[in-house]
Amino acid sequence: MPDRRSYDDPCGIARALDVVGERWALLVVRELLLGPKRYTDLARGLPGSSPTVLSQRLRDLEEAGIVTRTTAGPPVGGRVYELTGRGRELDDVLLALGRWGSRTVQTSAGQLGTDAFVLALRTTADPARLAGWSARVELRVEDGAGSDRVVLTVDDGRLTAARGAAASPDAVLAGTAAVLRPVAFGRRSLDDALASGDLRVEGDAAAVRRLLAAVVAPVPA
Image (cartoon, rainbow, N blue to C red; front, side, top):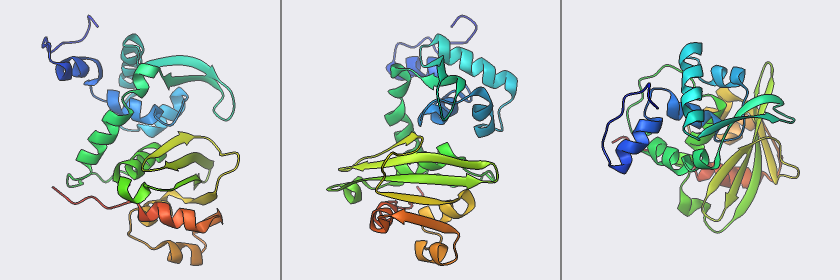
């Protein structure tokens, strides 16, 4: 990219940072890990980024072959941005970075968006507690305008996620982000949230409990 500075270092790490090391670049990738998004949805998920910077990062990532523009059907619809195969290879990179960063003392007053929340679940889920079983749980993160739907899939030690509704999930966990986050990270019990009606579970409640029990709060470094 001729308009950007390079580290001019043959190391693979330096070459990677030449591509995704600019401010907001990896967070754009984070917002697309679950599936395609419209520009307006990307901007809502990255409220600290200006339209000028976000548009430039998207152009940079397109030029690098990490992001592409396409037309999506329901539920997203219209012109969207999505990760290419090369971009999806950053999934494990972001998981490792999120796992490392979760042990850093939190000073931000901001709230986790749905995509960041789901990535946090994946980075803090203990593979040992996910091993030996499988399940699909549809997560419905509700707000006044509707709900974000994400399918969480446990498959013998690994937790993956994709945007959208599941055709036949083992269970559905629904509620507002303000309730889901403290329950997921152990600051409020699931039983309390269910008893108050703040959360709802449909289907196999045991699968939901087992999934939440696999989420382990990080120990600060």
